[in-house]
Image (cartoon, rainbow, N blue to C red; front, side, top):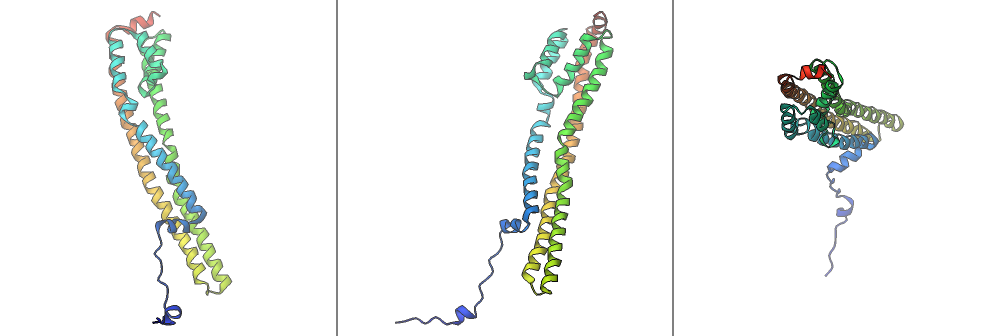
Amino acid sequence: MSITIPASMFLGASIPDVPKTWWDTILTGGTVGFIIIALSIVAFGLVVYHFVQIRRSSVLPEAQLLELEQRLSTGNFDGALEYCLDPIHDSFLTRVMGAGLLRFQRSAFGIFEIKNAIEEAGEDQTARLYRATDGLGVIGTIAPLLGLLGTVIGMVGAFDSVSRSAGSNYEELASNISLALVTTLMGLILAIPCVALFTYFRNRIDALASEAGREIERLLLHLEDSGAGSSGSAR
C-alpha cells in the first residue's frame, strides 16, 4: 500500500518560526555588543575584587588591632613600628600606623607629629581605595554610550537599507533596527548595576575609613598615657 503525501504540505504550508534564544539576541548586537560583553566580564571581576578588598577584615584586621594595642600599651613602640612595616602584615591599618610611628621615631616633636602623619597617611590610603573603584565607575559611564553608539550604527544601516531598496527590503531594515535596540538594552543592563555598586563601594570606603580613624585614635591614647610625648621629644 502506498501513501500519498499532499503537495500542499510542501507548497502551501509555512515553516514555523524558531524562537530566538538569548545568544541569538546578543549576536544581533554585532561588534558593539561583544565590546559590551567584554566590559561586563571586566566589571564582574572588579566587583568580586572590591567585595574582597573593601571589607573590615581587610582594612582593619582584628588580629592586627590586638597586636598593635598590646605592643603600644606596654611601651614597645619600636616593636609596633617593626610590625607595621613588615610586608606580611600589610593593610590599611598598618600602612597608616606605620607612617605615624615612623614620623614619631624621626621627629623631635613626638606625639604632635604623629597625629599629622597619621592624618596624611589616612587620606592617602582612602584616596587609594577610591582610585581602585574608578574602573567600575568608568564602565558604568561608557556602557550607555556604547549602547548609544550601537543605536546610531543600527539606525544608519536601517536608513541606508531603505534608501537602497526603496522600502522593500524589510528583513534588512528589521535587522538594523534590532541592532539599535539590542545594543541600547545591553548598555543599560551593564551600566545600572555598575553605577549602583560604584556608589555602594564609595560609601563603604567612607564608613571603613571613619571606623579606622576611631580605632587609630584609640591606639594613640597608649602613646599619650605612657608619656610618649616627652620621650619622643628627647629623641
